[in-house]
Image 1 (cartoon, rainbow over the protein chains, first blue to last red):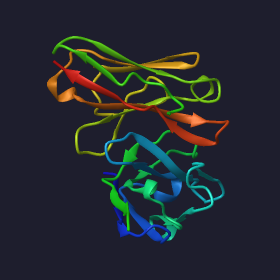
Image 2: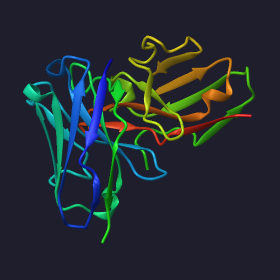
Image 3: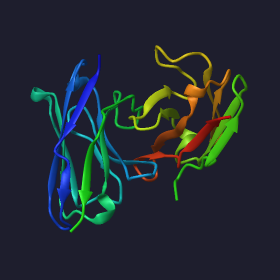
Length: 120
Length: 110
């Protein structure tokens, strides 16, 4: 069974940093692309970033480009999101999601999310 | 403003059929597979349809997907009260080099 467990969310002041982690199990982690998708309170889904199986291909939404960095450690079956210079509009539930063979192909499993609140 | 356009809401009676549309462009739906997701209240999204019309194991055949040109459609037959949820379409956009989602459609089963 695919399991994705996010951690690292919390309350942070504008301009500060936060690092999210995602522990994956139930599948061969280094065979799949991975993603971060967020959902602001009461709003729809917004894709944040995706990374290919060997980290050679990485993509970001324009809204986070230059501030967020996605990475993965295949030896630890883990996905990360380093978020710098956080803004109020980054407040959201952040989901770790499993992709397929490429970043461009389907997103098929989602974790339960970790909440990030950016407020002074 | 979402890149993919969905109706904000649809409704139908139990047992009836409903369709949800998703409109895009040649940069996204026109050249990439479409996925559909169901998000029940208070839960994470769940994959319903991938590669335009394929169902993952465990998804009942009441759910179907189709694509024509730059639009895609999710169909749900034999509506149940448990189908009340938000539904999202999603695909890759080659111009933005990013995944894009529709704004979501809230299904109400009257």
